[in-house]
Image 1 (cartoon, rainbow, N blue to C red):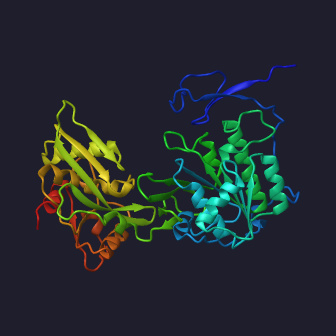
Image 2 (image 1 turned 90 degrees about the vertical axis):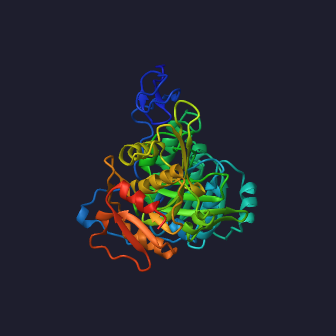
Length: 457
C-alpha cells in the first residue's frame, strides 16, 4: 500500500510547504505549521447541488433571472447598520471575536428575532442544549420556529438541514465542526476549510442565511487560514475590552453593504443593548478644563463618532523616551510627535508620552491626527483646550493640515452635540454648507492650529 502523502500548512495564513518549517516564510510566525494528509485528486470534489437534488447549470448572463429578495431586518438596528440594512437570503456571515466577548449572546438574541421571520436552526458544538436554554431564558429568547441542535458532525448537520429546511442556520463555532471524510483533527486548517466550503454550498444552493462563529488567535485575527475570510460573504469582528461594558461590531468585508461600518452595544445582565448615540457615551465623563484632552469627530464607515483623546506628557526618567498608545496606532503617535518637534519646536524627544482613546474605542484613520497633536501639545504646555472645541484633520510630514473624507457629516454630529467651534483643514471648506450654531475655522498648518486651540480665546 502506498504511503499517504502529507503536507505542512501554516495555521495562521494557510501557506503550504512540502516539509516542516519552524517559521512561516509568508506571515513570519513561529511554530504554526501543522501536518495534513493530502487527499487524492478525486476526493472531496463537490458539485454545487441543492437539497432538492438539482445541480447548477450553465446559463447566458442575459437570461439569468434576478430575484429581488428584500433584506430581513433584525431587531437590532446596530446590527442592521453593519450588515447594510439586514440579512440577505443565502448569505454566509462570519463573526469573530475574543473568547467571552459576547458572540454567542449576540447570535442567540438575533436567532430569537429571526425566528419571527422563518425557521432558525442553532447548531452548538461547544455547549449542550440545556446550557444554551439556560442562557436563552436569561435573555428572554425563544420561539416555536427556533430549534437547537448540539452536534459537530457535518454529515448529521446536513441531514437535519435537509429535513427541517430552515431559513437561518447558526454554527457556533466553525472550529468545533468536523467533516467525517477527513482524518485531520477537529479545528485543523483542512477541517475548517472543508466545513466552510460545505456551509457555503448549503447557503448558495438552498438560499439559507448562515452565521458562523470563528475563534481568534492571540493576534486578534480569525483562526485558520486567511482563505476562510475570502470564502464568506461578510466578515464581522466583535471587539471590546472585558473591563468595559461596551462592545463594537465592525464589518471588515461585506458583499451586500459598506465595509468598516460600526455598531455599538452595551453588555448587560439581560444581554446586549444598542447604544443609539455613542458620542454621548464616550464624552459623558470628560473633565472640563483638563489639560491633554482633545475631542475628535472620527468616521467609522459612514457613521461619525465623537471621542475624547487623552495625552499625558512627562519628562523621561530613563534614557529612551517611552511612547505608549491605547486605542491608537503607536507608530502614528510617534510620527505626529516627530512632526510636532520639527515643525512647532516642541522639545519632545526627552518626554514620555502616554495616549489613549477614552471609552475603550479603537481609532485608526488619518483624520484623528490633529486631535492627537493638540492633546500632546496641551499636556506638554500644561494648557487646557476649550471644552466646546472639536478637531479634525490629517497632518502631513511638512506640518500641513490635509483634507479629510466626509467632513460635512462630522461637523453635523459635532453641532448636534452642542460643540461651538471646530478646527478643520482649510482646503475642506471650499463650497461646503456649514451647520448652524457651529463656528468652523479652517487652518493650513499645524502651528496655526495649535495657536487657535491653546490660545484660550
